Image 1 (cartoon, rainbow, N blue to C red):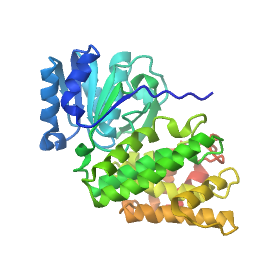
Image 2: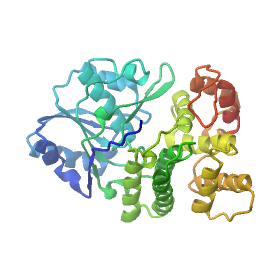
Image 3: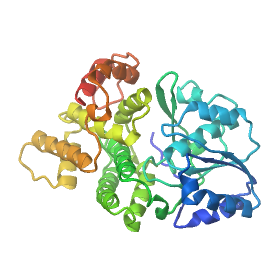
Length: 386
């Protein structure tokens, strides 16, 4: 069975100054304001948000200090403080939004949310969430996904629930003008992976394929523009929209998906917390593609990427054309100053057995993939990243 559910209302423009009125309009009165480091204070966004919340007569409890690759310890500390709230506002990117989601189910369900991350329980309740987005990348502002890390176990795990899809997301492209070239590029890769991992499957879906190809073209064009001209409003807007629609189910509508590349990256940034998610994905995608592209179930998909994204002419040899497209994608990442090898991430090949084990948990086969893979195959794929 396949379903599509995307209830989030998008506000595109300078609506952050009215976020208090938006929240009050739903009838909420007590807000947990979740945010990251000092950037929203330096930019003045923090003051804008607080002024709007107070102007709408909302009670505010703050939870600032969310880190990249957000940690379960922070989530637990907020839950332990037992804030008196009825709504959560996340102001930031994917790390802040995912933290808000984990807090949401933890507070509402009375269960340590790491149990959800580990798949030992499923959420049945969640507090409502709203978002003011500050970077185009994770797509969490419209998705059913939440990814959290545990530094003690080196685990980085995701879980899904429609319960914490945000009620609304405010997307002002101007808030992303100050995002660095590096983080912009990380966001571009993350958006592309959310689409590519839905596209490269053996499952049919012609409409989903068209959505995916169109979104990929938009992201690549807008990503290059934003990297070179960071205050290009239209490019930033398109990236924000692509971020949302890459991960809300649109590009796999009518079919399932298999997020194997994300699994590899979660192992990398779970063990090496310094690695940005998008940068890790840029390393994982080419290697995984090289491992599976010859499979007849997905070879036509790779060939189409070559044709539609890189305009590679038909040579009469599908495998040759598909491989050229994979190499072109790798060069595209490099042109955005993204790493494409473990070495560029500062990771030695000696770490590969550990990474393969974190990915597979020692299982010999994982069947929900283009081809069955397990520890041995994962080790081979990590070796292709060297």
